[in-house]
Length: 454
Image (cartoon, rainbow, N blue to C red; front, top):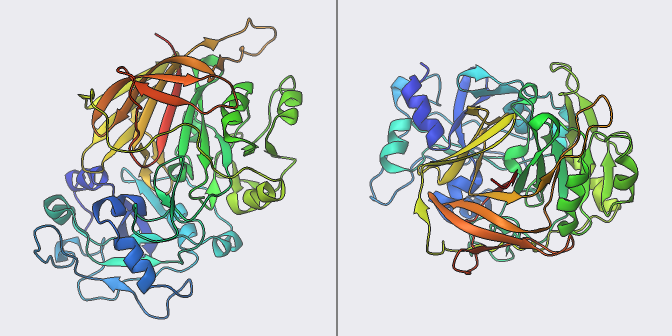
């Protein structure tokens, strides 16, 4: 029996999405980072208990967890049978092919999402820790804890670290403030953001997502990965010169994109990047279930191997500060920003502890993790120049990311008036409150929208 619309809404608000796992059974799934926020140190304990081959020889499960009330909760209710595993049954242990199954079987708002096919050999190469949670929405809403916990895959080098101080050998990411096992190379991918390109794949795993203006008042995304890498990312689209200015602060990052205007290619080819353009680099493929040009995807393992061979920079500070919120914030439920033909809205979800992303009036979904979200959102007001049109195509805007200006910073259900500063392209971007104090970010993914100053 499928959950009611109201129950499904509560599950989404709590950070759960329904994912096809095996046969007709569906499990709600919770991102490890979000589980860590609710139960600090628990993932690390499970990983230590489950260390071993990618497919454990026997099921590993925690059927009963205790919340703050110290009250034990049973497994899923019988009325949810068919959606969750039945009480007393062995949980399914998913192996190396879990990423492929999750991508192909995702359901968003009750409708199958168009997700790219993932080659079986790629799924075998990429393993990811996935926390599969069997729990009713009512139990989650009442106690905020999960039952029927299952760990699949291996810990692997691509997984984000547990919470601060939960395990030795972990360092805070300069991009998210979360714990990761040492510095890793930086991979930036230009992502299509037209309606026909949605839902995108892999964006939910990005440390930073930049929203940038393009021709016709539309937008594209630039997803920056370092802490974790999805098996597949896309749809990949073309680069703009404004991308290069953003990327300079990362050192020599790897940059994956589909192409560029002929007038821009010479500048991009000379830029301080590891150039992973489709046609120069390997790892790209087309998903024929989508119409071109919104169907170009890339295997990140192949991109990363080429990035490493090309000497891509590891993650380093780009000016972000993480920690408790400064004073001066005002409670807010949502904040919006628009281009002439694109709009974005970020709504606060206390249940998830995240800002939920909406684009053009609809939920911004991913094929792997449901609605996109961020721990911190920055609306960075800047100068956007649009040159005169010189041909049949619309002129390309350029959003400056060097200089200074006003910003709105959203974190923890509050909005902060801030100032941003980046003196040169090689410098990072720093943020300060109206009183001059460092504007700290909440730990987790960061979304930055570059928009024309009002």
